[in-house]
Amino acid sequence: MTPQKKLAYLKSVISGYGSCLVAFSGGLDSTFLLKICSMVLPKDKLLAVTAFSAAYPETELREAKILAEDIGARHKVIKSTELNNKNFASNSIKRCYFCKKELFTKLISIAGSNKLDFVLDAGNISDDKDYRPGNIAKKELKIRSPLSETGFNKEDIRKASRKLGLSTWNKPSLACLASRVPYGIKISAALLKRIGRAEEYLTGFGFRQVRLRHYNGLCRIEVDKGDVRRLLSRRQEIVNRLKDLGYNYITVDLEGYRTGSLNEVIDK
Image 1 (cartoon, helix red, strand yellow):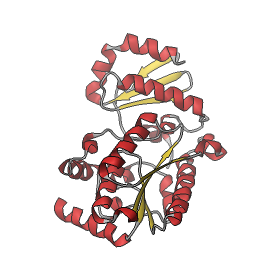
Image 2 (cartoon, helix red, strand yellow):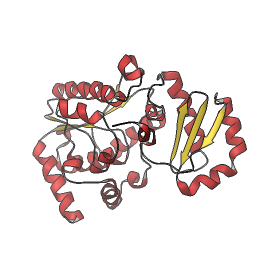
Image 3 (cartoon, helix red, strand yellow):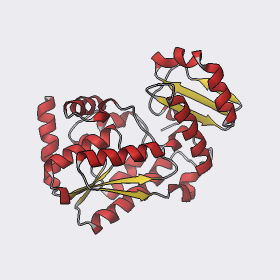
Image 4 (tube, helix red, strand yellow):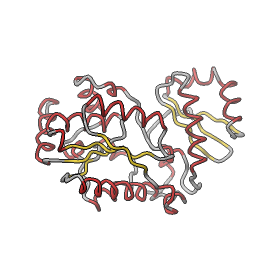
């Protein structure tokens, strides 16, 4: 299917929904989805909802507000409380399931209050390459994923976003801060704040993609492969800062950044 036909198909599918709520993080995928929804649905038939908690950097919340305003979509911010759920905080391999179950349950309620027929998320076929137990919650609650349903992958979304003039077309992949913590290590708001501060510091060096994987007193830094040498050239100041944040040992992953690297060691 050509990109033009695929986009037309996506618009047709969304138009058929009639009205919807979009789970909106402000990342590449959800911004593209919200933009397409805004092109085919009346403003009063569309609502973007951003969930905010300690698991998401405040900078992302600010950006989501700006993006929703630029698109011209109604936007609501809610607080998610996944950290209050012991099943999430204990950090089993089903962590993502408990988070998504709580989030989508809230979104369904908001959709009902606003007389919106469907709740959409921005999952796409590239997500199928990683372990995502949150997809089980999506199926249970009948959340629609139109990008996946119409065959969009990350590269399709980037190309289409660029043609639409969306500033997010080359935005790095996002994931909640809890994804930096290996399964079995308890998650807390204080821990997520520490990881967020460390990543904000590292991003300040201009690295396009940064992940800081947390192992209690040790951390593993991931940047794009092409940035590893530049990261090492600043190693002393980086070591000093991360030790100030409580890490005794600072390591660099020589394989570079890749989605879901903590899932590589589990039996799925």
